[in-house]
Image (cartoon, rainbow, N blue to C red; front, side, top):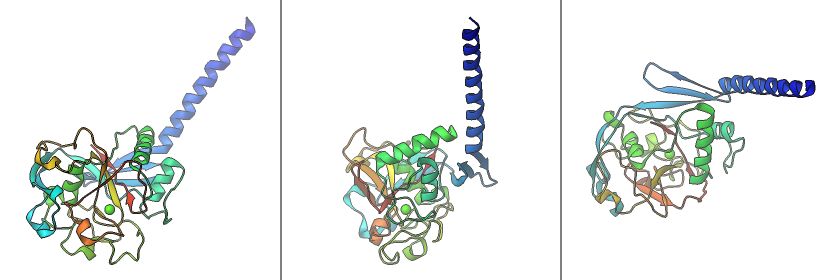
Length: 270
Ligand SMILES: [Ca+2]
């Protein structure tokens, strides 16, 4: 009887110790701070990352005038979209942050402040799930509409062809200036909202299924893409892309298991 009581007591104590350790570990592993501009900074395993506050609003998505004659068929028709407030990553997810969450780094071109690449859409879901476990938040990939609204500068948009400028060289690492590799995040000019590299550096996975004709039937309020499909969307062009692919309206897509050194991600927090 005594042994059993001691055993039970030991079990309870062990459980309490485990809970205490977990609490300390969780508190030390992840925390959040809000800055004056409304941006939020999170720290996970000692690595901080900033989420830019984007005030919601209404915009015309797709083939708008400043895109010139470069629009693809899948960018038409231009159509109105409204979105609530959200937060989006100031930078592409870096290799430092990916490693802090995943414990590994699959990137081909290695460097802490380079964007993570060679990650599939499925890998990104694993990364986000773990990040949400650490932080208790609901991070996810941006929808295509959220991505484009942020890339266009949201409510502060000046109507540029690329994210933050009509002069691609001032805002994007792309085929003609990258030296054929990724560059440290945030080393070109930001866009109207203070977000970097939405044009160029690495393409960025979005949450939506790709729908070639989706714009013809997209709802106005918070569109999330077709309900099914074969490919996932990515946006913004890359270090390997032509200028036209770095336009705010251009839509890339491929299957969700695809990994490439031109393709990474950016976080969104509703
Ligand atoms: Ca990018």
